[in-house]
Amino acid sequence: MRRAGLYACLLLCGTADATAQGVAGLDSVRSMSTPNSEPRGIRAGPVVTYLSVGLRGQYNDNIHAADSNPKADYVAHIRPRLEVRTRRRRHGARATLEADAARHLRNPAADAVAYGGRVTAHLDLDRTTRVGVTLAAQREYEDPAAPDAPGGETRTPIRRYAARLEADTRLGRLGAAAAGGVERLNFGDVAPDNQASEGENDDRDRSSARVAARLSYGLSAVYEPFIQGAYNVVDYDRHRDASGFDRDSRGFTLGAGLRYRPNGFTVAETRVGYRKQSTAAARLGPVEGLTAEIALRSNLTPHTTLDVSAQRLLRQTTADNASGFFATRGRARIDQRLWHNLFLGANAAFARHTFVSALGEREDRLFSARVDARYDPSAFLRLTADYRYTRRVSNRDAGFARNQVTLGAELRY
Image (cartoon, rainbow, N blue to C red; front, side):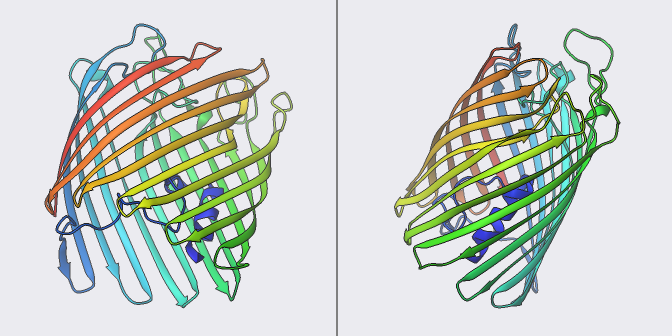
């Protein structure tokens, strides 16, 4: 249970890689090793280097997530990746470099090249204490369907830099975990809808810092209650944004919950808490309220995994005249291993985003569904297929519907 506490701290710190589906502490059948399907790598003592290049073809019937006059296109993705791992008895490290070049057949203005790198390392001070560090830098592009996306023919480029330090330990039945991180976001300028000139995104550039901690106590092998808290600071480069608001903010989260593991193939966790985010602009005011989350993962059979989750969270936003929104979300996913190297998966999700705005309430409702398949015919080749449907209904001019079909192949070593 030791790693579960650290996982929860990473979620509180808002790290990008802590949004894994399911509950920590139990592997899905999709992530389990299968015979003769794991990449071999190039080994040199304790160092292993993995190389891969993926090619994906996608049909997207609404590449800009537009509410009217959607544009369909065929998109090709080339995704090279390099990963180096080293592992000793008490320490280990991983370095990753990867890129994603997207080329559009009908809309070349939407072409984009994303790339980035990440380094993670950990040190086991003893059998129950671990410290770790993560450094990351990447250039990515904002999804047009994101709540903050300004819209337009060009996706917003984002430069993201992050550093994180974490630690966890266990003293008998008492567990403790802490994490802290800093993040820098730089948004590029893009042309909004129906405008030839570029719109400024400089008022979205910001730096943030977060710390989180969690204490747990194992009442038994089945029940483990916990308390947790986090504090964050967000500092925007511009004193005021285009609407005249000072968006600098401070906030905290407090919560308590219970981790439940009745057997070796089911684990669940529930949390209830309170979050408040105070913004410097008086008109935007503080955003506060109750938050809650429940997540369950169960390996129903040795070949089937079920994930179910529901959340009510408070998120910050840079949408016009709003400082935050309450996100109420539900999701269910099932993964099935049909053969030792053939997997099928499906999920359905619903989300309601209620924005706290100075000009009245905006509410978005999102519905999504996905069906995907993965086949590993050998250790050197992986084949994938994916269909996704997304629909957003909004009381503002932000609705859209989108279908995406993707076929992919990846060469690995």
